[in-house]
Structure formats: structure tokens, C-alpha cells
Amino acid sequence: KRIAIFASGSGSNAQKIMEHFKKHADAEVAIVLSNNPNSYVLQRADNFEIPSHVFDRFEFYKTDNIVTLLKKMEIDIIVLAGFVWLIPENLLKAFPNKIINIHPALLPKYGGKGMYGDNVHKAILANHESESGITIHFVNENFDDGEIIHQSRFKIEKGDDIEMIKFKGQQLEHLHYPKVVESLLKKMKSL
Ligand code: GRF
Image (cartoon, rainbow, N blue to C red; front, side, top):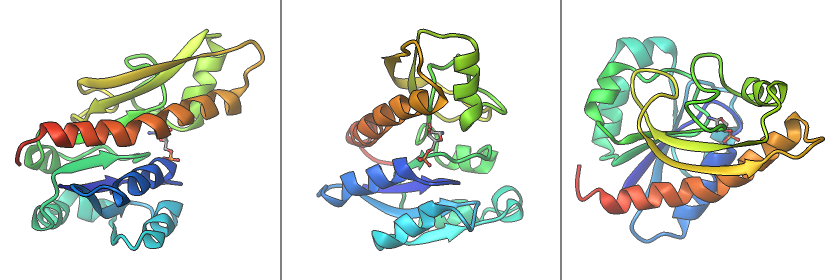
């Protein structure tokens, strides 16, 4: 089974997934794609000797290049890991129920346009939430909106700041995302 990761930034989740599947006999990360030529995730892909592809808005939204590339590579699942652009219709249609995303909150709370990065944690803190968590979900044409596959929660203690909330969420993301990808791949008989 072959995995494609889309990421725009640091790629700590991508790292965990690359590590997990490096040791795995039946699945591998075949390619990392990014809209951001300066993203650290590209360095991480290099370190694992995994090929990468950087695209711009034109290529992503106005051509079929990415679909063609992923089909040619026989990709089974597309994993968004901190990828900040909406997925275009041609890609959604080419990979139905095969694109997943991770979000650092308990969706449907704190999701949608503008709810990414520190904005999420700031909003959670401002609302004095006593708990938060992470959500892994199928991707559709809206931000953070598809069917939920997995959620896990953590407590927010008095005195927790944005960094602490972010840290607690990331620990859960790193623990669960590789496992959820693996279990989805197991369920997928064929493309
Ligand atoms: C994660 O918190 C994820 O939930 C969100 O973007 C962040 C990506 O972090 N979608 P990283 O690049 O994997 O470190």
C-alpha cells in the first residue's frame, strides 16, 4: 500500500508517519507533496529518502497534474498533515474516501476557515474550555468538515497556556495518526 502525504509546514506528523511506515512491511510513504517550497517537511522527506513534489496554486487548482502523478504512483491513501489549502474537486473525485486530515481540536468545535495553527489554541484558551483534543476525519470540499474517523481528548488544567495546549494535542496526534492511517489501509481491500 502506498501513502502520499500533503503538508505545508514543519511536518512533525509527517515525520511520525514516515517513521512508522519505514518499519512496516505492507505500506510505505511514497511521496510528500507541499505548496510551500520552504516547508521543513521537505527536509524531513529528504532525510527519509522519500521523493517530494512542490506545486503552486495554478498547478493544484487549474491542472490535473497532481491527480495524474498520484494515480501513476498508485497511491492508496492521501494523508493531509498540516496542509492548509482546500482540496480541489478533481482530487476528491479521483480519491473518494481516501483523503484524510488531522485537526488539533474536537470537531465540529474550532474548525473551518481560519481555524488553523495557533488560532485554534488561542480560541480554545479564550473560551476557557476544560478539555480539548484531536480529530482525524475524511476530507470533503469544506475545511474540517468530513466524516469523523477518530477523536481523542485531553484535559486543560488551570494555568495551561497556548504552548501547553498545543503540546498536549501534538502528543496525541503523533500517537494516533500513524495508527489510524494503518488501520484504514487494512480496511481498504483495493482502490
Ligand atoms: C497539526 O496540529 C495538525 O492538527 C494541523 O496542523 C498541524 C501540523 O503540524 N492540521 P505539523 O506540521 O505536523 O508539525
